[in-house]
Image (cartoon, rainbow, N blue to C red; front, side):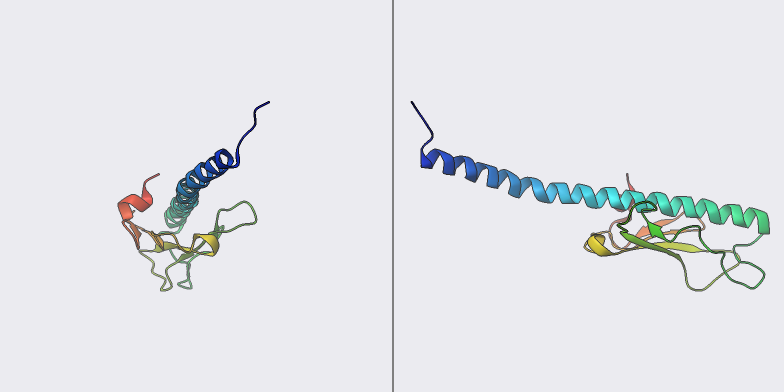
Length: 135
């Protein structure tokens, strides 16, 4: 009856360890990209909300000069784990706005950092905006 030697078993363990070392960072980058994609979708959805508000009121702010309350302020909208805080720029303007998604929790180490979208549809990021916004 033949079995495995200790050397053969150690080689198998070493190969598995090497594969895991290569695969895990790639997997984590994929997870970060999917969370970022959800945040970009949220920003686009909120931009549509602001445009509908503008269409109905002729301005992005209310009569008191304040932005309307956003329907949600975290991404993803569902689930208990949140990875981005979403907000409008701090200085209200009747003719413009900038939405921002600030990473938090496990997403804080994302290379793209804060994602932005303004009333002109200009997309920005602390990292390379083209790479950060592609889905």
